[in-house]
Amino acid sequence: PIYAGAKNSFEVQFKLTNLGNQSIVVPKVAMAIHDANGIFIKDLKVVFNVTIGPEKFYQMPKTMVDSPSIPGRYKVVAKVSMKTDVQGRDIWEEMAAAWFTVTK
Image (cartoon, rainbow, N blue to C red):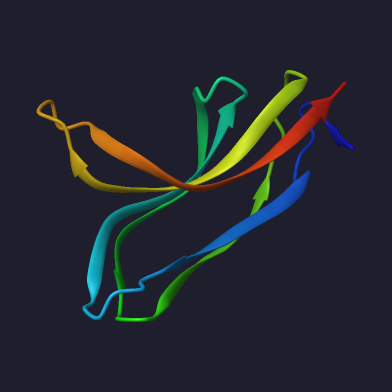
């Protein structure tokens, strides 16, 4: 079980693969926690300007997660931001997610 407010409850990581035939630069790559409604809770790690060669991958380093303090369902989200809106806010695209439940 994952207990509410526990330090270093579990670890997460993900791999982002470029299936194309040209290198790409991803301005922001992030892992974050969202609640059951998809609402952002907190970033776990954000990496800037990730270059991925053709048919290569970027491995987000393992990150230890402190569990949320309120019991419930959450998800760890792997996401990228390739552009911003007119106010300069990141537009995030979810690449993958893993659900988990926090108990008392």
